[in-house]
Image (cartoon, rainbow, N blue to C red):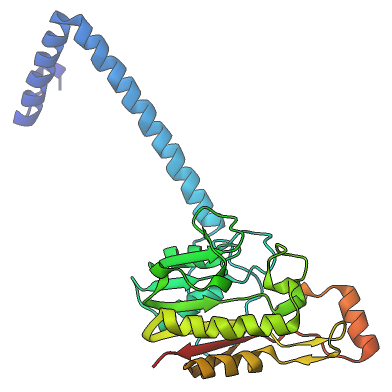
Length: 288
């Protein structure tokens, strides 16, 4: 069939008319034609860039899929490493954000106010944003803009009152001695540290709402160098919080990974026939 024998469809005829009309307008106004051409080229470049970005993102997702949160269903929370999404890497005493994730899952709901008076690396800040909780995080020497400078030994700030949960991860007395600022409670005597924790328990009772929670991450350890005895800090702190008016509602074992112990630590433990301190308690208190 010859080309001039082809009968155009109604749609084709209409599109031909539109194209002819556009061409006539552009021929009469060459300046507009140039602008249209430039805009088409710009759109084409943006589309190409968007396509490249999409391909790049798909590649990243394929190599490192988004980490999901699966709550622990027992009272043993063993995490081999910190979730990279939460907290400042390399900060001394940084804990796995998964600990706080599970706490918020079990004891809070979206929109609740979470307080961390010793925020350190900012792990609590990041987890709260991830799980849609409001937060006020403090530290005596903040390293992040979203952590407020405050010394918790002076009590809680007014804006913290009525909160839903307080997360406490204090220095386990002298275990991190020299790692923090000079004002840290890791630099004081054992008696001063115990007095600090007793006051902190009372301050928590004043700030958390009725029905709210206080969670304490704490470790017992064998202190050979200073006191020469085993220090059951969880037991001592438990008494402080019960005397303040709290009720213990759960105890979770959160072991420290053995990777924090050096080969020298391992050899010393074998030589002295002592056990390495890897156990850590997470105590959940409720104000009834």
